[in-house]
Length: 397
Image (cartoon, rainbow, N blue to C red):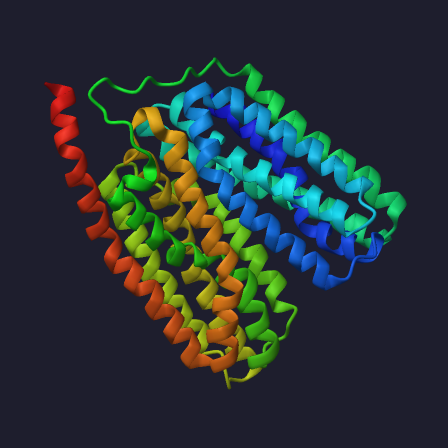
């Protein structure tokens, strides 16, 4: 079961890694769109992606997660092939919006698929394994993207974009080898409500907006910080990214041990926020140091950060799965995915406003934001557990 999920992830993320590395430059240099229009189109697409996250999860709950995971991933692949046909801003906006919406809907459906196909006590470990495979796939796709960027030619971009789309479709079709995962009927005594009415889970999802910024911290704030505020060589950043990727591939499964339950997940999320806040302080120490000392601070900060990143992933899987009713896993994965997308979207603006504008005090302010979310998370999770206890007692009765 997990091997099939991993195979699908590997194939799909090879295509994703290629898109991450070339799509923006393809539209700017090959399609000849102004950078401002590309940025606007990506912003519109991101908003549309967030809007479909919960409804797509609900559809997966009603129809079945395997069916919808196949559908949405295949649709994303077809839309990616459409990139090769883009000739102007309108076509770009349509194509990138379809790709982003299909990706968001696919994420909700795949989350529900893991919940339905994998036993509860194995879900966190399964997601950890899948994340390690994801990093391998993205790395392979990035190498392929580097080849395309080296040629920087329409004749090279187009066939590789079509290949990327076909990889998505193939990744979706792999799910056909999984046993059918029928939708879980809503219990008769369970009220018909949506995830938006589950106030404790909404609070947990809001706190997730802050904690998920650990990813953008590394990919957005750190390279600008190295280039503009430290004497460390800019080339060091590539090594830091490689270090992060290798550690995630090797240690994500091991770091997920102990986070299989709700309380274990809450502890992992709390520790993640504390460690990420600590990494902010270590990164801040690089300012005004010699090149070698700044590099040492950046390497140390990256090591602390990646441990926090590993714990965040494990904790988020446990909390989002174990607090969700069995019949509404898609909705709950959609809600958690929505706030993950929102946190990722606002990270560039937040980090630029704090870290780049204010220097090392900005790192400390950003760290305090993460620390506050980390300390609040266990209480929010306990509140969510209390609201579920009566339902559990009724089910047992």
